[in-house]
Image (cartoon, rainbow, N blue to C red):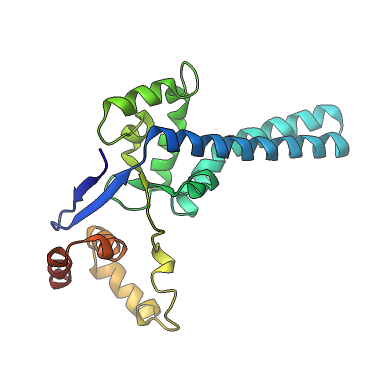
Length: 211
């Protein structure tokens, strides 16, 4: 499956390319190498500066936080891209093509424990081969998708980066937006801005009419 087409409630089509197992596992391996290197560095610092018992406790705690927090932090704060995924032009998104939430990121990463069984992502690879959208168990539970990007997408704050002044950022207008524009409408507008270049002219014109 080379492309997945998602239709929003407003009937706007968004085309996404699910990432393959090979590129996803390579991205995970790159992240593993980086986090392992940081853990070794922390261990050496602890040995030099702290008593043996305290050094061991600090190292175990920091390794635990780094192992679980690495993916969650980058997926939520860095637009779904860890350093490994960035190197391979991959991104984790919501099943609707929107940024993942903290809850979704936690669910998909906790599920790695099962996806990893019995060896290096054995269960995850099996589930991905059986599904056309190439989602592992964690993606299914969190309703997320890992996609491949041919070119970087502008996300949230980057959308108006070239504008020196944005009237939508004034406090009065933002209060009106929060009160009068529903969450579904905001998600639709964000998706439309992010995918405008990939939509057909007819769909793009229809979306502008809806706005």
